[in-house]
Length: 421
Image (cartoon, rainbow, N blue to C red):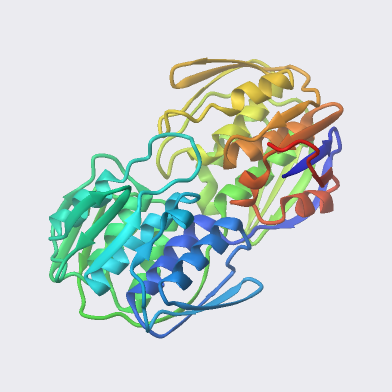
């Protein structure tokens, strides 16, 4: 196992380029199963989850080659329609192969997914939607087995907006017979990016970016080349890193429009944030101020930045309430932040943060991807040395984080952990 060691209280200064979005790259990779031929995806981040997904596609017969941030794929000769537990257990997004395989090949066998332990995150909406489109679905020994001669358009009303559910159903509907309407669809930029890719492939979709999607199925789709959109969660994390450590950071290759709710809260908390095209400049000169926040689906404040924001509130002046509405178990980082001196009390879905404390370095343990990022930010803000164990969580979603922070002036290094965690 590896660990990160951070010597805190070093102000940040410089530029950082934001990587492609993992949560956009994975569904776009899944969409390559919908058509044979040569796909080319650029700005694909080098991450554990991406590597796992590419292994999953290769196991199905897709030819994959990678050179840096560019991935070339050809799924003309699919030879396997299984997504095995050995790969799926580490990454919930692997369920995204279900819709494309069922639409193109008429059957699929996908293990029930895993990923971070931040809540139940069931796939009921995926399965109910596919059943409405004519699929026959059985759950056997931890696997979803689905069959359909050809999916047919249907009216699907989602109980809650679900990103992967919307993406799975949108891909399935692209090749279905007739019109599919998805009500209460997710509106995240990653969903829109997938929809734009499908339209470039020949799909007919109306309502992208709204809660109501209409997809008119076509008989076949064609391969395309595309560039993966910037990672808004990584961008938000680096803006908050400037808030945690102090100083000034310039983010390059970002889409500011994807971060409006986040930047509004950070400005309210005392950060100076300027936008210029695909650049964001974030500065913290003085004391931060406490701000309440509630997570919600896009365009609201993203749950994937809740843990990082909590670090800023721990050092801000005043009392804040952070309410988590998306996942029921996403306060696992609270206990680790408390080890560093944070004063946080969890009451149901809300965390009450009494700010103004001085964080101090301590050995801590990452519990999930975004909790890992929050501990890095806490280490940047803390006096003394912080040691973060189980950083493999971090490697699932942040490309070269210690290198990027080091280039900004942070004292951070990766070491072999002396204790197996």
